[in-house]
Length: 205
Image (cartoon, rainbow, N blue to C red; front, side, top):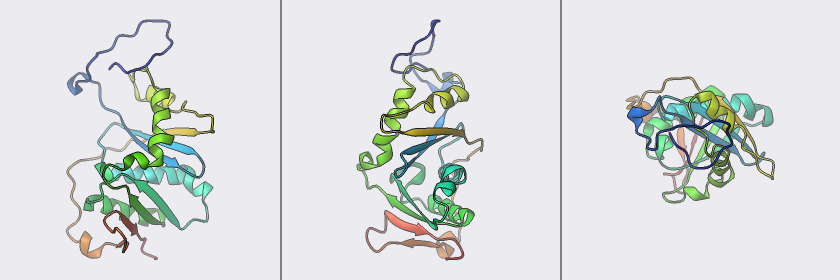
C-alpha cells in the first residue's frame, strides 16, 4: 500500500492507495523496545496477532540478545508501557504472560503503565518510533525483509542504534488466563497507584 514520504528509485512503483486488508498480502506487527540508558532500540516483527504473548516474547528476545549482556548483574527489570493494547493494565492474561516471563528469565519484572492519554510521555514515543517512521518513508513493504532492512537504518545525531529481528511464532487471540491464576499469581501490586504499578516475581523471590 502507498506510504507517505519520498524515496529514490530508478523505476516506477505502483501501489494501492487504500489499505484494505482484503487487498493485502498479510499484515506486519512491529513491537518496539527502547533502552533509555543506552539509547538503543529493538524492533521485533511478526505477521500473526498483537497479543500479550507476543509482547512478552519480544521482551524475552531483547533480554537474550542484548539485555543480559549489557546488564549481566541485574536481578530486576523495569518496563514502561502504555495502559492499553496487548499489555493493557486491566488484563489478567497480560499479567499471566508476564508471570511466565519472570519465571523464564529469572528476573523480577516491574511494570509501570502510563495512565490514559499519557502515552506521549513514554520515551519510546519520541526517541525511537519517529525515527523508525522517517527511515521507512515512501518505502513499500512488499516483504518482511524489506521492512526489516529499512527499519534498521534508523539513526539520529545522538547515536541511536536500532536492531530488527523477526519473531516467527503464531499468536492466537481470544485467550483467557487460567482459572487459578488470580489465586496463585505472584503479582505484587504497589501501595501507590496499584492499578498501574506492580511486580511479577519468579519462584525464588
